[in-house]
Amino acid sequence: MEPNRFGDITAFVAAVKSGSFTSAAASLGLTRSAVGKSIVRLETRMGVRLLNRTTRKLSLTDEGMVVYERWRQVLEDLDEVDATMALRRGKPTGTLKLTAPLSFGQRHILPVLDAYMKQWPELRADIWFTDRFVDLVEEGFDIAVRIGTPKDDSQILTRTVGWQQFVTCASPDYIERRGVPQTPQDLAAHDTIAFLSGERPNPWRFLTPNGLYLFEGPGRLNIDSSEALRAAALAGFGLVHLPTYILGNDLDSGALVQVLEAFRPQPDPIRVLYPSKRHLSPRIRAFIDLLVERWEPGVPWESSPGVQFSGA
Image (cartoon, rainbow, N blue to C red):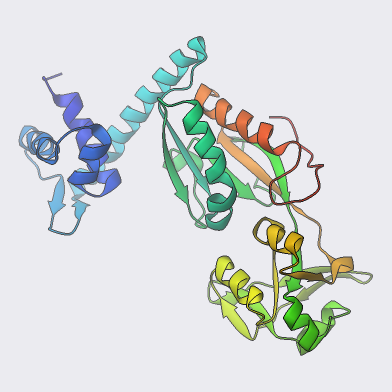
């Protein structure tokens, strides 16, 4: 291999991932000029343009897309070699790639990540908090945190670390003005605040003596943000149907009052997923162990302990 070629490839992949020479330079500890020169050397060596450059963004050419996928995989394979060697030393190394749902990740995964990074200062982490479905294997992630029953996939291992319980609630002011619904069917006469998903409100699930009941709205207010739904409920606008990982503190403080508790649906599992094709590298094991250690006595959004865990 020619001198500098490996460094040039690393700079190219970092620039594509981050979307700019400046961000790539910061992540690699180089100057912006050095990153730009690396990519020019690659293009000169290969005789093709790999990136389209504008003042606002970078984009891959067709040729750049081909080599990016191959080079990204090569670098990830090298990271796996490092991880395999680290297994012998028992010390987490490399970059943890993790994804989790937006609100859940910001509220409850980020504090664990903070402790994890402080415990292992040589580690880095690339984090995607998004409600988009992420394919762990195709997109090269180490860990995903998912809510709900996962699909059967022989390439994925799972571990349950908590439970999501949906509750229906409103502010004391709203309850005083409008009263308490006694059955799920009473919701039709109330102001409800629904979560929009794909331009349609998500149905509210309830368990009744006659089986599952779905309240499908639409709400008087429909919002595509669970944090905005919470804010609207606290302001007294109406009833919301959200998980306790968002509303737990508000219920404990009395800022929100739960209704229809007798009709609550069954809780959904919260699971950590990781690709089975890889060794369980120290960085993956260390994060899962820390998460379980913190949540096994009781998840942080519930006032009472007792979360059950399944084996890895």
